[in-house]
Image (cartoon, rainbow, N blue to C red; front, top):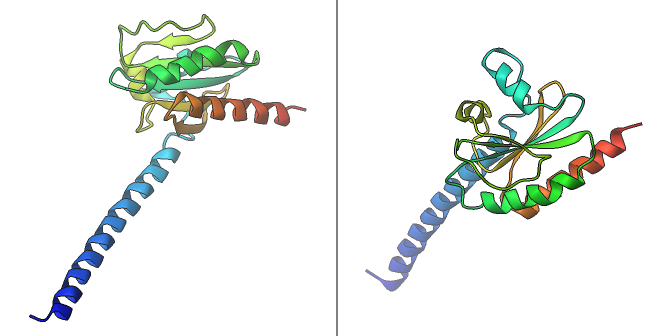
Length: 169
């Protein structure tokens, strides 16, 4: 075999591998995009979610729900951000931390409601943890996003508070 033919074959194999890797990466990005929107429009008000709605929502206010689990390596960073943000929230905003661990014992301010019910944790159907869900007074999830760090949580919560202030007459 000539060196030129061998080089063409090797390059063709490399191009095929790059194409396959690109297709796999595209698929994963698409799954993450779809997952980001999963949960928006969920209403904690009907059937099995009635208990979740009454526990999660804040009458007359917006609830910032942080969904964590016991195997989450970055949840401690997210909880530190919750601890920092909770006292600074406007009166019509509140945090609720939902954990699947009945033995959850992290130190959080009194303003933060801690829900340690695995059934309620499962009723929050976002496919990622930690997650932030913004729930209105009627129990409607109006926004959801994965929270990859405490800084990401701070950023989203600050934008939420600013938008809420701008929307008020």
